[in-house]
Length: 150
Image 1 (cartoon, rainbow, N blue to C red):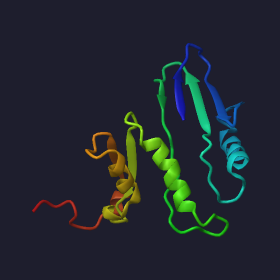
Image 2: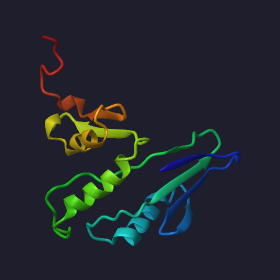
Image 3: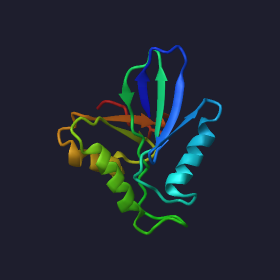
């Protein structure tokens, strides 16, 4: 998603992919994203490294680009290629390797932090952790006593 400052009082939403740009609106954005995704990756469970960019031009927004990357899966589900993990890892690494990238890991308290592949990938490119942040979700699932000081 790309936010762009605009002097126009009207918001402008567009989807860019495969060299094309389609204008859309808030009412149709979900279905337009699904159509664009199917055009890029097919209607199965595959992935693609072709970017799909949602651009919002509006007065008062900062110039900012955020990249939402696929979730990491190791075991292919029905219809996914056998090398789905390698495909996903390659896409993720392409975006997190540049020094100017800020990496945001989404971590759930319902899963032990030491098992998160995203942390391992982040550490491989950001050794000091200076450009890596974590958002912890499902705080209601945090094991009892986990936040107590000893």
